[in-house]
Image (cartoon, rainbow, N blue to C red):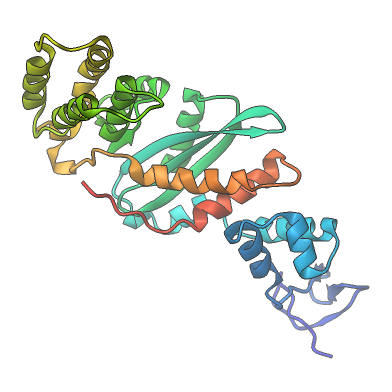
Length: 313
């Protein structure tokens, strides 16, 4: 009989201690022999990557529904945390942090998933899953966890969440906060037409908005805005879109400020939107018990499986 090595003291003086445990005669501790049949890998591939339900996995493996659930949860529990990966690859991070949140319902109650993504690493670096809506407290906790690892932020990019904007201005007054120009453009476009195909006038007006937001400098954007605003034949919804854009222009052109030009801040947070999209797509097909612990394990594995996202400036 092949005796396994003790995981505590690495001794080979082990004997059977009932099924399925072993006893180490050197340190006196008992342990369970680790499986080497690839069952954990198959559970993660089926549940996370293939987006299969517990019932479908039970049928595939020819086991009971409870066994399939325990097998998946055991596999997810043994995975490393996202924060551990960030700690090992901290030297690849450049400090440009993308922040965003996703609303999730667990048994009818609202929860929020907060995600941080680093431009240098091109991968998510941390996440939190908390009960309730967006709150600056959890953004503070997320950044504190990263700072304890030695992560030092140099700039932030987000979609313009009011609570996050106020929190970053208070805690990091000397760091730039760039607002996602794509989010501003989509919000302005939704005020021009909603739920119907745009006509030629709406298409031309949307193109003018695009030229304003993607101007080379803030001064050029304001000049184009004033020229469009002074046009006499604008209708009500077009002026409503312009009123929305005007106060956001300084936030959209933080990357053009001379103080932060060396950071080369991106103008879009689409990279983290792709990460949030991976979570959203998987949760739509999720079945079974939706408790906070199992959901944290699932989100952790989803973020570990995310491929590197490259930003197109």
